[in-house]
Length: 173
Image (tube, rainbow, N blue to C red; front, side, top):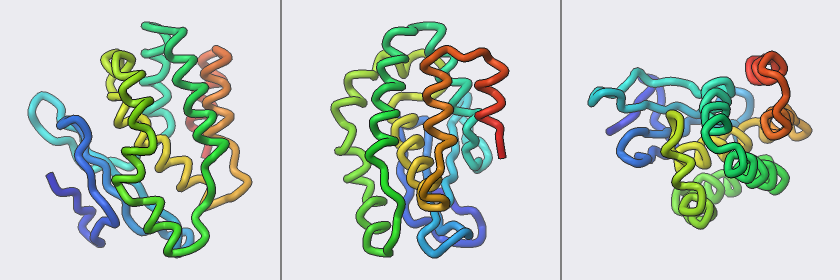
């Protein structure tokens, strides 16, 4: 399954669990910015190409939280630790290294296996969520090094903040 946004070639494309395809393109904020797109197979047909929004994965985490609160909180702790270690992209070489699919997958192979059962709840697999989260974190920190919205959202989910606060953070522009 090829993802093409009609204007540029992707920097990389990867299928995820036969149900998703994630692609990364050159972004428009800076020469190191990335633009993330994905497609999802629903009832045997591929969706249109989408730009992921925080509210998409947030709703999935809320479903997982309802089904398995303890493991979901552990997963959120893991994502918070990834956030803490994520650095912005400053050079073309850094971007090439960071966006090597092998690096993104191998880096979290253990967690993908550990949280696999959590991926059976909700819409998104753990592999998809981890790849998407890592890419969104890189994108956010590259565009604004002192960004914090992603982490605030993770922490609000973990604390069990009321739905209105969580949705407000997830949809803030």
